[in-house]
Length: 347
Image: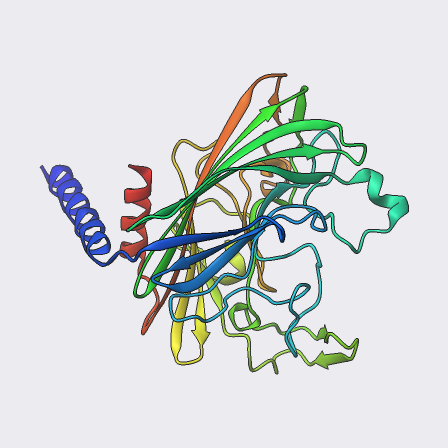
């Protein structure tokens, strides 16, 4: 009886959250610019993000990402650098989806910074078709097709991704469904860097006790002594109660990163879906501003105790579903609220 009451209470709470969100949903509009190869996403008439897929990028990205009040929660570098922000890892841009080792090719670390003579070891994700871009009174959606190729344009995987955008006065949600179909036999060898990543604003980094170097867009290097960075104030919390840097390499159905940006509390949460491979996912959540989930890095995250090495034969497919929540308010989202959002996503 207690279990039934607990279940009923949880379900009622989740339904209450869902009903409240539906009542406040804002209209979503998608604006295509085929010449610039980008699609702007507006929620409630205000810019939220842009899907960017120019040939100059090694992968499609969502950039920048804004909270409902307009605050940009992603790092500006390398596209629009801001004074005083970190300039490490030039492949970290907005929100992206790729992997470090697909048949030996590194899709994750590829960027303009890789020397030409070393490019052969890196993969490229090329968006070749916008399947649909639809506005909506409560939800907008974008579906695109892309190919995961080597430098000779030989295709390893075909990607079909649907992005659904929604929001209310304080919250923005991205629901992502990605299907990868093998054009030839492929192996996702267990690796650290994957799968869904986001590089966040300086404010949302965890304060570091180590010296940090920052380079601005003019090449001027500033060294910030450990423990003196007054901008960074973020931290992590997982569904299993792991906090701060201890979130890295652990499993959980959700993980949130939260901190103050201006007067508001900003929460960014990633939520796993029960149908995904290797659920619940491992968290590749780093204090310096990389927020990522990676269900395919098991060997690394378990220190070699177990291995995944996902394999697809020619013609086989794998599907990944994730939810990203960006919330700004006077306080961070509670575990109960995040469990409600995760329950609703699972349904």
